[in-house]
Image 1: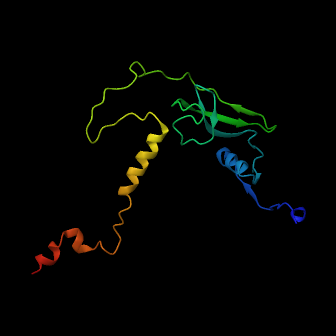
Image 2: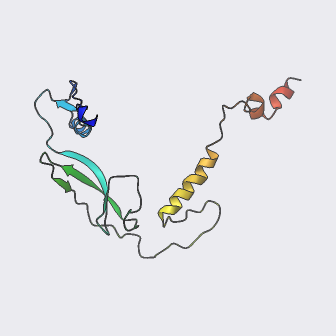
Image 3: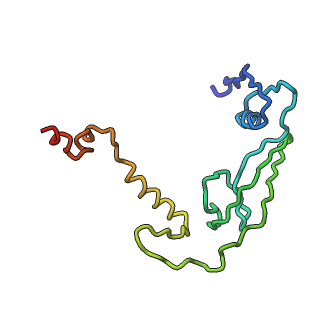
Length: 157
C-alpha cells in the first residue's frame, strides 16, 4: 500500500519581498514568489559550534558541547547554497577573559551564584525552580479571605 501513496503537491504560494521571511518560507519547504523577482540564493540559520572539538549542534539552547562536554560553544552562521553545499561561518577567537583563576572562591549562603560546571547542574536547577511554579492562585482554595488572611470578614463585624 506504500507504493500507492502519491506525494502531496500544494497549489499555495507565499509572496514576499522580505529576505528574512523568504528564508523561513524556504526552510519550511513552501513555494515562494517574489513581487520584484529578487529572491534569496542561500538559506541561513544559526547553529552552535564547539571551539574545542569543532562539533556542530543545531540546538541553540545548549550551553555545553554534546561531544566533549566543554562550555565552549560559539554561535556561528550555517549557510546552505542552492547547490546544497553547507558552509559554516567563522567567529572571532574564543575569548579567554576571566580564565586566570580556575574557580572563584566560594561565598556560601542561600543566594550564592555558584558556577555551573556540568550540564547535569542545569537540570537540577530547573527542577527546583518548577516546584514553586506549581502553585495555582486561581484554584478554589484561594479566595478573597485567604489573601486578606481572614481580615476582610472580621473588619465588617
